[in-house]
Image (cartoon, rainbow, N blue to C red; front, side, top):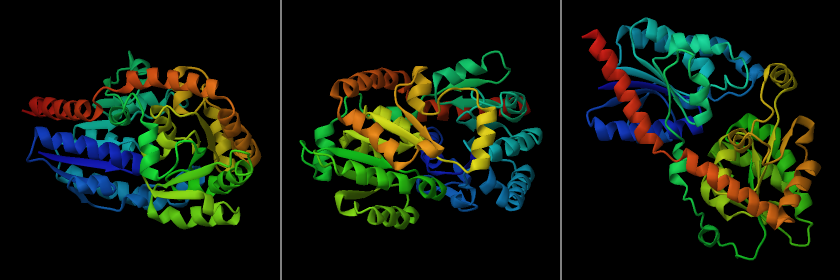
Length: 383
């Protein structure tokens, strides 16, 4: 069995690797080729292009690289149209993968898209394109599967792999012991994102907020999981500029330990908000985009929140700070409110635990079964 697969950022790399591992359990002879990161490479991916070439954020950044992206997408299409795999899996990256999936499906290649685009939030007309592009949509969240009902899109919720990894009862004491942080110390986790553009937009504000919080009577310390080595210099420079580097413990990744050990978390919007929710830690969510991208998003978006806990709960459980509001002073004040209100922190942890239970479904295995079923179903039709 031959599987073509494309992921474009670290969160997709992790999802793709889990899917690949479970596919190999079911089909030991399977081979994989496409684009992914280190986790997918560890599962045997024959990489055709570095994943970083697809790790772009925001409209303006994508536009600068559009000619190169179009050439790459055309090359992948020709490769797999001329020598069809048994199935193509696009992991997230909808603007790139859905177009590739549509062309491959028209050429007779079965297609699966893993991680629904946010069509429930904005540009709902994209459902028509999705219906033409995919044989099956794998969603991470139950509300997404419900959204597709009656649309003509074969969608199945597999749950979120992170919910399977995190225990329902987080062990904060053990996480602090691994970090060498005393149980009585106040600890704040800073998660500025996994892409250069995110770190560039947010790290200055995060470091400034840390400097403000460091002046509190409880003298917090900070833990910063660095998502990728290429981000370390920018993170260190911002922390040093604001005089808090010596108060920070930098980790090579390991977001799970960082958020589980923390009293509160300051995080970029995205997958990190889900991981913080699964660790049952109170959080403050921040995000900045280029002014042009933000303006367009404000015109198009149809939901009142972007943080995963708020979307899953259907209400604002955690504060969200965007653009100018994602500056040091308001971020520090929002984190301080969690630190000063243990009852509120306990209540939000209780809500997070209930949401965790809804997402823990054995996602890697369910995704692998869905991909196999799609490939075999189309093979049967061809036969």
